[in-house]
Length: 92
Image (cartoon, rainbow, N blue to C red; front, side):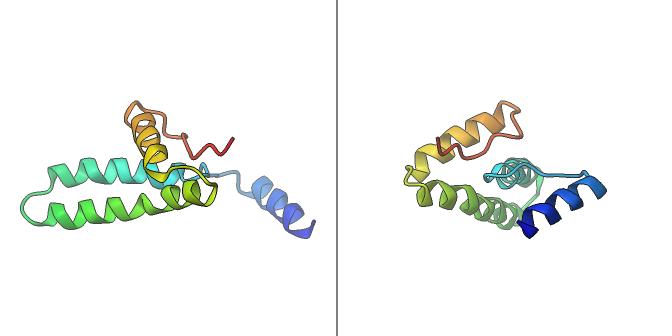
């Protein structure tokens, strides 16, 4: 109960929030991959690897929920490519 009250109290003081369920990581991965495409030379491979590492969070959330991680990531990537920055892993 104390954690919930503290979270509500903090949200009232500072209303900045980020989407959960891997949505933030998925959107960052999409944007960093776009940036990687603009990077010259070998740097693009390191930047792209970092973006792919961010995809680990939503994939793990999906697998821990008993879902197919690859299928969920395909749906999530498609949603973010279409501009739905708040799309996350839906376990229902």
